[in-house]
Image (cartoon, rainbow, N blue to C red):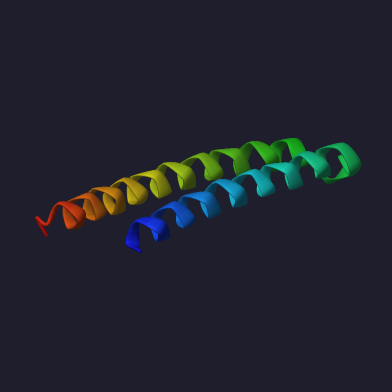
Length: 73
């Protein structure tokens, strides 16, 4: 059950990340007067930092799940 939750969480993180990127690409194409490139660069940096933090959290959860499945925790 916990392993399924981890995979569901990973799927959600990947989906939300790509959805945000698609939204900013849409804004860049359709609304050029909003000065999106500068915002987009900052947003991409924040998204990258967020993904790194989420991957680190996911790694900890995966290790914990592995220990639980092996009976060490």
